[in-house]
Length: 91
Image (cartoon, rainbow, N blue to C red):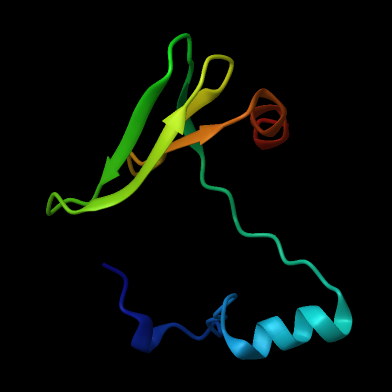
């Protein structure tokens, strides 16, 4: 785990009241960094995709439908995305 005490970059709480107010006043959108994709699998049957933390805690659970893609992030996390989003992620 990264030691945040020595990190000189400011942390931004994108859901905090300061950012919500900023979005209302300035109308700016902020992009998050997308981690490398290790793999992608096209979904052919509806299924539930789960990502678990190293201790076994459920981090996320998403339904994947035919035509969606399940991508695997650099840390093994799974995300369900549409064909359109997959194209954006892989440009």
